Length: 469
Image (cartoon, rainbow, N blue to C red; front, side, top):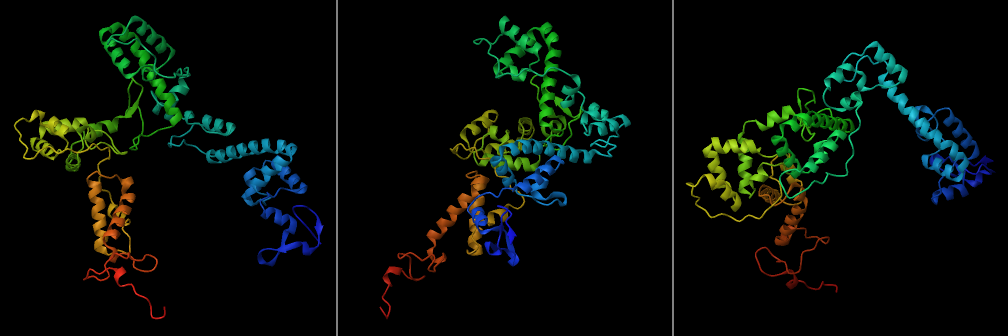
C-alpha cells in the first residue's frame, strides 16, 4: 500500500505509475491524469498546516516555493494561490503574512549591507551618533552624512528634504494670459505674482511667448524684478530639488558628478545642466573630423539646422557657435561648405555673405530627409557583412556590403532600415543571376532561365520524357 500525496488515500502499488529512474510516482493514476490535463496541484491538509506554520515563523513565499536557504519545497507559487482561492479562510490568513514576511526579508537583506558600515557610499566617515541611529532604525539614509549634504547644497533632493518647504503646486498646464499684445496687462502681472507666491516655477507657469513677454516686463520694471527675482530663483531651485529627488540623478550623462561648482541651474526655467559639459562642448575647437562630417552632411542634402541640432540620439555635428566661428575665421573651409551644399535653400543661405563666389554647377534639388548622418563605427564592416548570405561568392558579398554602405552614406536609409534593404538587394541579385542561385530541387531554376552559359536555349526547350515513361 502507498499513500497518494494529492488525495491522501492509501492505495495499492498498482495504482501508481513509474517516473524517473523507475521510481513510483507520489500521485495515483487519477491525480496524475488530472495534473497532466491542466489542474493545479494544491496542498493537502497536512502540507497546508506546515505551510501556515512556516509563514507564521517568518518564512517568505520565495523560501517556501523555491527552496531557499536549504528549506524543503512544499509546493509551487501557483499551487499556493490556487489553494488560497479554494480555501478563502485559509488564504485570508496566509496572504497578509506573505506580504509582511516579504517586506521584513527585504529590510533584513538591506540591513545586512549597512551592518558594520563606518562610511557612507561616497567614503565619508560616519559619526558614532549616525552609526547608532543606523543600527537602531535598521536603515541608512544619504541625508545622514553631513558631508554629502554640504556637497549637495543649493540643489538636488536634499534641498527639498532639509528645507521643509511646501511642495510646489501641481499645474495641469501653463496659465492663460491675455493675448494680442507684446505687453502684459496689470491683470496678467497680478496672476503671475499670485502663482509665484504659491511656489510655482516659471517653467511650469508660462508658455514660451508669455515667458518672452514677462522678460520684457522685467526689463522695463526694475523694481518689480528686484522684488520677485529672489522668489523666482527660490521656486526654480525647489522645482529642481523635487525633480532630482524623484529621478535620483547624481551624474550627468557624460559621467560628471553634479556638485555645486559643476552644476548650472537656470533660475528662469528651473532646468539643471552640467557646467563642465557646457564649457567643453560649446567652446570646444573644431576638429578635422567635425569638418569632414559636416561636409558629408551637406553633400547628402542636409540643412544647416540639421547639422547644428541633435539627430538620431547623437549630438549635433557642430554647435551653432562652432558653425559661426568656422565660417568667419576659415574662408577656405567656408568655401568648401558652400561647394558641398546640395540643398537649394542651404546654398542661397550660405552664399548670402559670399556674393563673389560663383559655383560651376546648378543647384541640385535634394528631397527633404530626417535620416541622421551616417558616422562609421568600429565593427560596421562585420555588421554589414553579416547581411550577405554565406553561400554567395566573396566578390558578390563585397558588392552587397558596398551597396549598403553607399545607401547609408547617402542618407537614403538609416541603421534601423539596413536589414530590410539587405533583403531587397539579395533578392534582386538572385533574380538577375538565376544561374548563381540555388539550383537543386528545393529551389529549382525557372523554366525560362538559360539552360547553358554560352547559349540562349531555355530550360523549357530541353525538357524531355525519361526512357521508362
